[in-house]
Image 1 (tube, each protein chain N blue to C red):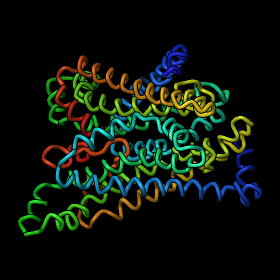
Image 2 (image 1 turned 120 degrees about the horizontal axis):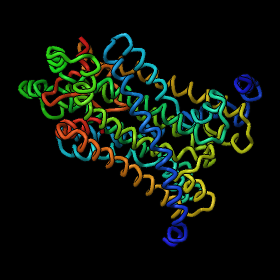
Image 3 (image 1 turned 120 degrees about the vertical axis):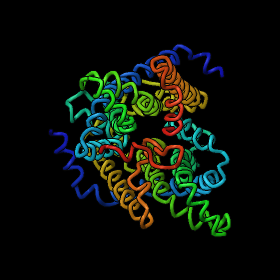
Image 4 (image 1 turned 90 degrees about the vertical axis):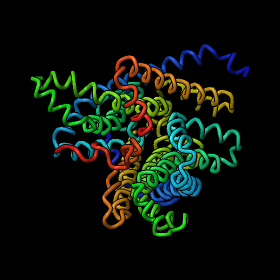
Length: 220
Length: 249
């Protein structure tokens, strides 16, 4: 325990760094996957292609992707941007499939009713489809958040500071408490994101409490 | 794109294909750790998943562990276990970490496979006079195979990716050339090894996808193509596949 008290500054600093590195992929992944998922659901031929591509992207091991992104995009090797971009790729890969399912889970009669009462395509999307797909989207985003927070730690191997630093540093210096602190804080950050998403879902979609609980069960 | 040329040169250099630490040796190490971890995890998780699915007891446990385990950073866990077990036992420590990683998707696959079977099918088996054991072995296990193998696929995918990190504790695998190359800035071998790892992951995933198809009993379409990697199932309360898999008229 004494290690923890002696290093509170580093713990706070790296936790904030970790939250920051995780936030961008979670938010961007969520935003980008909505149009992708919508298209995949709307056009049957696209669905196959999109799901195949995201399936392949999801299969790529994280360390390999961290190494490949700098030469592919011409970025400096130690830039945190590499890790962020790789995690956005994973987030989109997980979320696109989920978003396609979310839009497919909408009762078609609700969509026909909206069209019948005169909703235009955009209006229908924002006022009917998106709110009804919302609970499943949030459930998917919870999966993305937890896996992103965990993957950020691997970034330390390519020089990106996060709570993962406690793993490598603790290992080299043989301080068990340091690694354990890193693990506990990573799980804590994951729980924080999860709670924030659940809360945002409840406040933003009060109509969907039941549906969300069900979707959450199915996803997890 | 010079780096990719260099990587190709590294990949095709005969020196990297023979002797200790060569590409075939690293691949074998990678596959051995992967297979061992998935096998041990399956021995633990599959019977447990079938028990939960068959009896309906402990559902919360099955669903809960899958969610909670995802948050656990396996890299940190592996390093922690190596320190606890001692460096001489690092292979055991790494395997334990990988097994813990593989259990949740396998448990979910076995459990969801049994759970998604139409109740009427099981009631019919019961009405025919089948015992619990017969129902399990002749009805539930065959019908659950596609989802179970989906779980195997998900577990294997995660383990193959994570075995990349065992090189950090000196256990080799294809991650070795990346992790050893980082401080030396040997971009050719890092990119070459990254390409190899991706190829290996895709080949294994493809083989398991084919196996999922083969494991689907004749006349059953439920579960085929269901991907349990990102989510376990999309089956509604009555046991039918929900619109998620039916719609797009």
